[in-house]
Image (cartoon, rainbow, N blue to C red; front, top):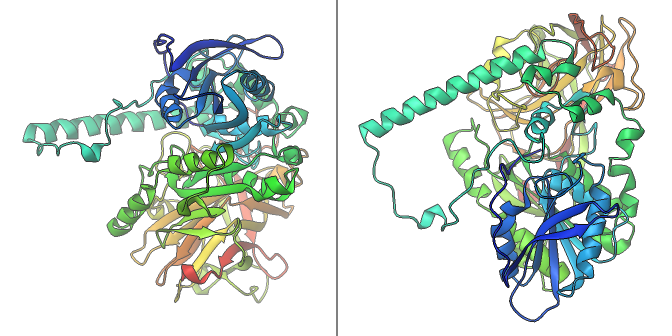
Length: 606
């Protein structure tokens, strides 16, 4: 989950446009503190709320923007953060506190009892918690880059611990964030500024020196993190970074889905929501599973038919910050197309959503569709009626072999006798995920060099596509595998192999074999026991172009993205042993390991 904020900002004086440091009592009398931005004109007004652990005072520019559009805007520090009292315990008081804030605001003389909420990342998920049994005054939400439920995204994904979450927790220690955000000067966009003078030789040398120092710092950080990960037990990982973090330890103790996580999860309670919601995320958002998962859940299970009809999804060529990813190994022409597509400003979708549902204004033509997706490969935006789109049906691509023993992906079941592919996994030298130092980010990076350098992974390729094939929906992998150890991970990536050989990352997923029967029922495997494993590969909106191949990569680690499975089958938090394991993947007629790919027949994607 993203982190912003930093040290407390100076509190501006209260005036007619902003009421600062207003105190809002929660149900247990904990004092929540926020700032209320007031529009000009005659009250009452519709209102927008953002409750954030990242510092409500950082929302001043947004507050003034909403006030200029005719909305009250209330930015509130989450319990135990910045100015609000109490102790911050993630996901515990979010629903209670949000309902208290809504109740306070709907009784305010300036509010017309029509309320929306907004926020990104943690603030997106906490909105969904607040939508459960929400008061009728909550009439719209904009949920940006929300993580999915535990064991679908954070803090655990497929049974593995998501390291992005660990580093997020380290930055959230205490009442304020441990780092400063990248804050602009509030001036006009850079394209209005005069052109910069050409760089001098001295400037170029200084830039090269700075880039070298940054690269060396990243490499040192990556090395330190790798050593910390390879030093068991994982439950004391926090101490190796110089702090005892009680939330991390509490979460690690609950390494299976139990009542602790049930109380903090949204997915099983969507029948108790009825709020029109705009979900905004990107294909390369590290915590983005929630956008498609909760959109689909609320479309199918919200309490009212009207609410089920009023859900919207926007997925762009963005990372978790709704920006173009830093790592882009695409060809230059394609990279420029992605950057053009990323110039769409999701704030326009947000403003239009609230105008429609809180001010009864008509939706504009750019925001009237239910689903808007940037289709990579095709590299343009496309509108759909729903997610997954109508006409996108799962098709089986079976794992097989071709002459020379190379792995294949084919539309028909393999013929002949038993087919098995094996590799040896060493927890002391785990397979890396990608070119990222922290948290294993998602981006269109080239993984071909890493694949060539490792012998602890398997590759399965389709034939070269002769015509475009659109993949839009939620792929998954069904795999039959065993090991000579009681536990192991299967980490899977999908990659677009270009004609020049670069293998560009599309999406990935993981499962810890002990959770093959469900997140609540971990069970070790007997040596040689063949298990059927299902790996969630999240979501995809991509066109495979002629001359390209689709590749499946299978390994047993995603170093620097997830914790390392020690292959012992014992407790995640306290295991101090590690053992190597031989992993075998079966892909014959008796063990039909296969990809289920969402092939879309929309003629506009050809």
